Image (cartoon, rainbow, N blue to C red):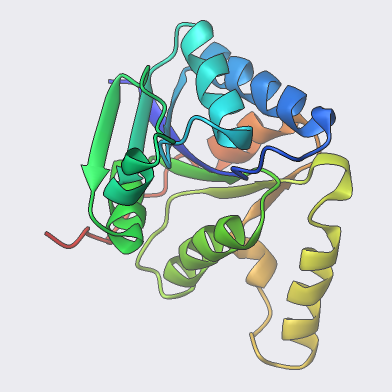
Length: 191
């Protein structure tokens, strides 16, 4: 069975072309490194660009999408598996349960919420699978500064940076995942 990388990213159709192009490059590189995709099931924005590139490169795509998004015809119909759920929390739980690792591409508040849950589960030692931020062009630099502030002001003890890895290029993503490849999870999806 192919390892599945859960990728969180934007669904916006209004981004600079460089973000869509890079999402496509990430998708091709995923397949070249033996990873399939599990993601939010959308066919638009970076989500759609990523999923289409994984499929075009011969990779496996698992989409997890809430009913209301299917009703709006936002799903990626070419997914190998398209799992329909009722709510956004069910979507996140299904994605976490299927994933072997997590990657945050540039994204908005939804992406931040999703990757923050992964970091929170890692803090609590409930999820020990690797988490990587793809810091395309310094996109997440200010977030990392905020994480430093959390430590400085003791909202989080030292070591928050140990909860995730940072890749500043596509080629850096895969070593970040491999160095954490032995992680397992104790987290279980709610049934």
